[in-house]
Length: 90
Picture 1 (cartoon, rainbow, N blue to C red):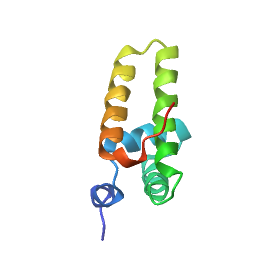
Picture 2 (cartoon, rainbow, N blue to C red):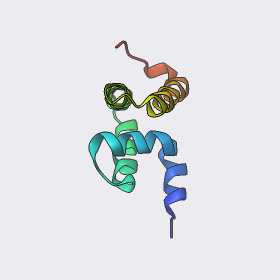
Picture 3 (cartoon, rainbow, N blue to C red):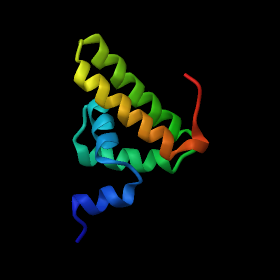
Picture 4 (cartoon, rainbow, N blue to C red):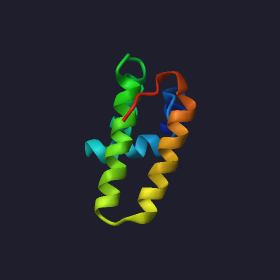
């Protein structure tokens, strides 16, 4: 039987990236994990995940949540660094 942690390891995403998807889509983490893994397998998926994280940053900034904003900027930086061949312009 696979554990949640096993699924994360197989997904190609970090816990923080999954959390960003879950927050953006208003879904449980396991659903966000499945969605993120699916998106990574599609041509438009990596730009879509990047946009999700950027949207979450904008929402955190709009709420004045500096800690969440900083955290999400690090998540975005890691995501872009681990998927360099799929970078898109904002």
